[in-house]
Amino acid sequence: MENKYDIVVIGSGPGGYVAAIRAAQLGFKVGVVERESLGGICLNWGCIPTKALLKSAQVYNNFKHAEDYGLEAKDYGFNFDAIIKRSRGVADKMSKGIGFLFRKNKIDVINGFGKLTKEKKVQVTDESGNEITLEAANIILATGARAKELPNLKIDGKHIVGYRKAMSLEKIPDRLLVVGGGAIGVEFAYFYNSLGVEVTLVEYLKQGVLPREDKDVSRVLARTFKKKGIKVMSSTSVEKVEVKNDKCSVIIKDLKKDKVTNLGVDIVLSAVGVTPNTENIGLEELGIQTEKGFVIVDSDYKTNVQGIYAIGDIIPTQALAHVASAEAITCVEKIAGLGTESIDYNNIPSNTYCSPEVASVGLTEEQAKEKYEELKIGKFPYTASGKASAAGENDGFVKLIFEAEFGELVGAHLIGYNVTEMIGELVVARNLETTGHELIKSIHPHPTMNEAIMEAAAAAYDEVIHM
Image (cartoon, rainbow, N blue to C red; front, side, top):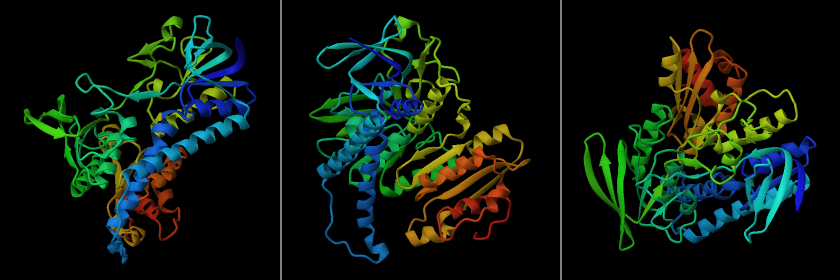
């Protein structure tokens, strides 16, 4: 059996489903190949359900601090199974929403594992082994990524787990070791600590938490984690994990002191990044160029094989859902011949949803100093914010970095309450080449957390009022 389409998309994550819908909007006949649930890892096991877990942790923490707001909450607790169930329910609802959008846009869904053939077609094999061949003028690979494994940290799904299993544990552990201080590791460390788990986080790099963020941000988050009881160990490697009597004995090494110690935990969470799903999808059969497992594409997301494109986590760009979605739209619009501009990868926002939240865009202070001769840097602390004080959320700040000659905003780094909702303003500002003085003169409503952006800009030019 053979079905013909204008575009076939392999994978239905935030890259794949967005590509399919945009293609359908532009009049293409579209088929989407998906072996699991619509929405991919992001909607089912990543972005969305993790935020549901973190919201439960946040609400539980609010109960703990009810007295700070003049409230009484004497009898409260949590049901771990119910927390997991709610998270899964949110994910299921969102996945069904993708199905509705596909039906609305007349997009065909072909369930099964998709693989490229030598004839530049797509062979789909379902769970029963049945095969169907799809033919398309254009094929978009959007197969995403999975948790990365280290040679000495093999995921077994029970004692050593990845982020997917960490979202649906059968029972809450007493002690958890998180390996990796990036966004995934930090978010899970916060979640489980909030529920009373003894959490240790180890990071190979010197900057223990969020090592790619501005150092000021990482420093504040590490301090906050310490207050919460999360033990952060930087410049530390995991040498070996042994499982005995249903417990993990972890050999860790302090790289600064060259000292080895043993740590006993119930579960080890490997959060050391992701690896692209590029195996067994037919890249070799067509001679599609790869490097270190990633598919190599040009600015239009074309591979070296005519008619084959790739987007999202399988290409060497930032492994973020919103990046995959942007690449999807750009790729499809390029196929359609529209005059779409290429993505500016220097203006991609990054969010981490622990508490306090972290958001950033552009260069860190260290990177900016390497690139520009003179900078103007403004920082406005939440302790000086009226809205933050009223909300009882004084931890954090907004830090803006401008190059001095033209006042261009080259970097923005935020930590604190609601900053993941605020960063979009600064992405737009950078896209429009907004200057520091233009930010200062843009009247922000009072009282809001967003005022801190205006105040930070003013601080960079010695014009700050409320500090």
